[in-house]
Image 1 (cartoon, one colour):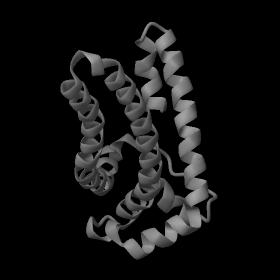
Image 2 (cartoon, rainbow, N blue to C red):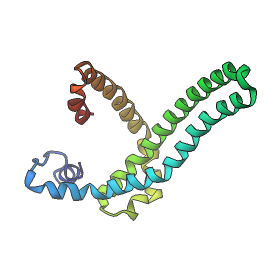
Image 3 (tube, helix red, strand yellow):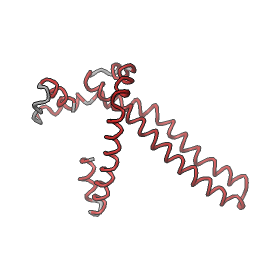
Image 4 (cartoon, rainbow, N blue to C red):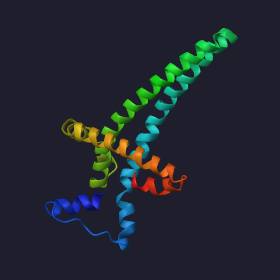
Length: 167
């Protein structure tokens, strides 16, 4: 992706570079900084998601434990409501995270510098200018990937192996 961006910038958008498997290692190395950036951000945010899901599971269990058998229906309803709420919260957080992750990964890949990826002034400016386009792209990817993966499932799960790279 970053070699394509560089080539398009050099040629004013008139020429895409040819894929050359002799440069496969160059392609992998170019993606190293975006990979490390996404790994660090994921490791920081993963505990937050775990705490949210853990709380959504523990609260109904505490209600059931405190109330005994009589509280089981109430605990079940509370658990369903909390899980639904958590799904909405996680979807919203995921959309927001993806809107912020895109400029992080783009900056890391183009600058080939880990520290430069976290230039928050640039990220803020990018998000301010591109939030709608990024949001629409993420929503489009979510919907189309759902369709492609479902088609893969319909092919006796074998199609998923072909659908996943497309996604």
